[in-house]
Image (cartoon, rainbow, N blue to C red; front, side, top):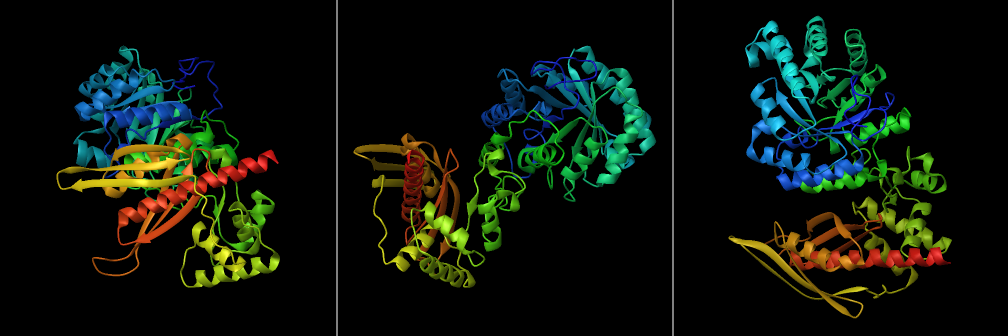
Length: 523
């Protein structure tokens, strides 16, 4: 239901506007791309835009077209892609900026000018009266071209409240469809945001209010929720909390807080959140911290014996939401804090059955290794358990490596070719990458795609010995499209060979887990 306003009774997504639903204005492609170190090609931006549309966001701020030719190209591609979301372009209160956005074929324009005295004096060199005139002129110009317009008073939370309300009232009287309150440097607190929105509502009673909160003090989501509670109806967010400095309000955190904690509706298909997060992380190259809420690696991971016991009996004991709600799977880590219930569950998943005495022995060994600083992978746990049981590791493999080669150099694009055997058939694949390991991993993934998408989720390299001929240990984690994960490790002097061996081991473990799960369903 994107593009709703006080003047429009229909949204681009169709149907009557639901004024109780919170609209999601995604700025991953604009403010998110302003994350230091991130630069997206037009093709990258179109790929992310299509995923955001699948996710169900209402408005996609596709970019700031005046900045570059590539930005214009990307925005035109997105505007022509036939997406359901409203496509928005950013523009300063300049007719040149607005024309650039209009030429891209956008549905709406997000125009802004700073209103705080610190910005007016030191950046714009304008008086309050001049800034107000620019704001009114920009809104009039946008409206004269028949597009939806959202007006932002940049640095609103440090603007004199009386002047801020004067500006907002003037642009609304001019025809602004939405007004936005940006906490540009993240300095407001939830109680003050609630009061600010309530105050602004007294002069813009019939125009929806948006919020654009930055996370400099870690309060972006909290401030957005507070503003919504005061009557704001649109939230500016970015996937993974990307954005300038400490980033914007995180899409995944805000949407799930609205859904789980406040029972408020959005149009987001929450089961696609993790998939979207992973796509954005991969394309931008910004790694998600493990303890990031909702989408971090550890968000649904458990090690503590008390926690694993509780969550295995009743997930709500230590999980505020079901991981499946956001496209995730629960996982348990063997370590010094683990207990018998968690270790037993992991062993069963690996197809290993033990009695109570054997389980006790395994748990003690796991804790002993944990005390020594060892992080146990599934491979470690399996080997440890089989040692207690007096068994050798099974050699059943569904995918075996026949051959591989890697080409790399100063003026050569790293390229890898692999030949694997799956069943009785041989598969060959070649891929390029940023280095020999990356290209080899991609080639393996390509060669094994007939088994469904199994992708590298985590990669760690540790030197076991010193020197140029150091023995290195590669630890990886892979995951398929259904969230089935497995970890593996390999060691050797050749990092590429060790990486390939670990990757194939991980893929085989996922395939064996799938087979075991299928047998359990049939029985």
